[in-house]
Image 1 (cartoon, protein in one colour):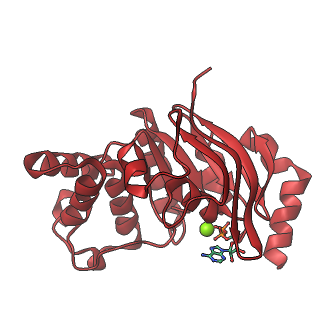
Image 2 (cartoon, rainbow, N blue to C red; image 1 turned 45 degrees about the vertical axis):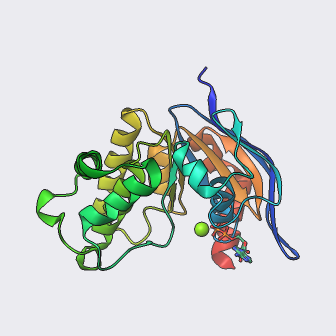
Length: 244
Ligand code: ADP
Ligand code: MG
């Protein structure tokens, strides 16, 4: 049994009177792909924000990464400790080229400089199958999938232990989702643990080894993805969410 790399214990986040994340506890094991599903507004992104401290940590509870408490750590220190994330909204720098964008992740995340940065940037872009011919294009001129590849390459350039993805499939076509599926399997195969939030269940079911479902900020259920997805409460939460 592998060790947990990330453990949340009773994590809560309130915004004034609203409890967006309620007493959430789970562990992500070293080397796995762990999926998080849940209807819109169920607290998935807020939970991600609490883990990475960007822009805020939790109101209550404990978060441990590789055994160390990180729930009060600074985002920069969490990133440097080996936890990288992407954002639901593409955080792009429109005028920077693809290479420059990924290099920023290398400077910030791993303190890389000079040739080390250049090598790491090419390696991350190769891993994400981002064509060499497009690497000097400005971010604003890339396709939606190109921007996603870049966002993932920027997170991977610092060689994280865990990669956290917030709804990476949003806005993608089916062939692009299939390519993303392959990419995540490849990244995981080189030893990167993955925590992935997805509203689109197809990708989650295909890549996740375990799946947790949030509803109204709380854990509804957790376990084998195929079993979880047949759970009546999950079906109801999704249908209820769609009808809302
Ligand atoms: P999900 O990612 O599952 O769609 P979110 O985590 O974005 O859900 O949102 C969960 C709940 O928290 C929602 O009710 C949302 O309106 C609320 N929320 C999220 N961020 C903030 C914030 N910064 N201030 C106030 N309420 C917020
Ligand atoms: Mg979200």
